[in-house]
Image 1 (tube, rainbow, N blue to C red):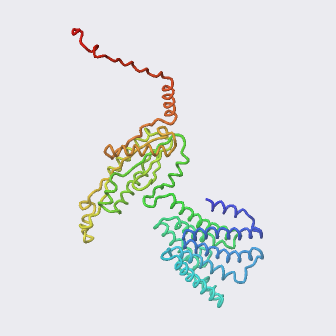
Image 2 (image 1 turned 90 degrees about the vertical axis):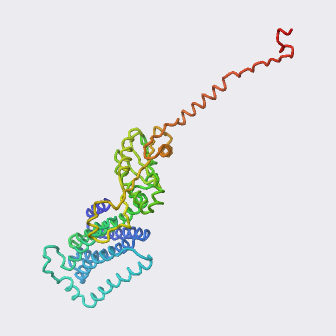
Length: 445
């Protein structure tokens, strides 16, 4: 959305000299921001794609400025334009597929070396035989590629379409925010390059859009890392704390704990424990009823119900408890794995060699009416209800018992103090002392 708004603003600006200075300053700032974020968070692929984008902007904007100002092409305009049209998508593909591995410093040196080598060879060949280089790029025609596909020559067109296809497959195959940004940046190249000399705003708008995509992908990825639990995909503890500061009115919080989770880890291993956490998280995330699921920590989760009291959430909580109880995790029996593909096809779907693992949860719920002292008090009350559910045999839902709020406790203490102050002191009963003679029976006198 910010990239679209910026693109609209840039398109509305006139193509004058001050606007050109503005574009250059804007692109420099965006490149610094996107590159700084990439360097800060170790996103070397994004960092080098930012550098390639900014270098492409400098090369192309210099040629378009001359053309739009003087009405003629610069002497090396064809060489620079065709070279950039081929070089930009190829560098996008190279950096997009070259994942960060090993020591960052060694990785940076390798990337600088390879890309400088590729760019340097092109520059040397272009300086030696510029006409031959232009004819090599612009005169090649592929019979299977119709000319109406693009106004660009065949080789740059093929490189652009290959970049869009390869980066698009990567974005679908391994869905991540930065992969989506890379794919959209390739699409932006495909839209921008054929229109370089048509409008003064095409190159700065396209490059600005690409740089904003890269910066936005890093910001969104860091937000996801900070507020999302990587194992379960649920919102994490930090996201819950952020929501708690903004809760108001009626709300309920349910604390969910996996029964005997330590036994899962001790008996079946931590990988099975992780699968149990993912299973429970997936069911909680689809609980419905206006709830929002969070990973609280360890084997404990939280469900926040906005605008609902505890008694209104019991049906939803009971439903999700039943759903989790009815789910069965199939454990792979390594000792009886099929030895061939034929055995695997024959045994597939029978489930005879994979016992089912039963998972249950205990749930405690409290609301803002039970604990009006704030969200942390509601969580404490829900925790107390959770421990009550575990003490009652586990695999059940318990609601918190409404405690007396601070005002009621203060009023009761004040009334007790006033009663004690106004009450008359009780007089002790007089003691009666008997003599030996008074203790003798009457008939003995």
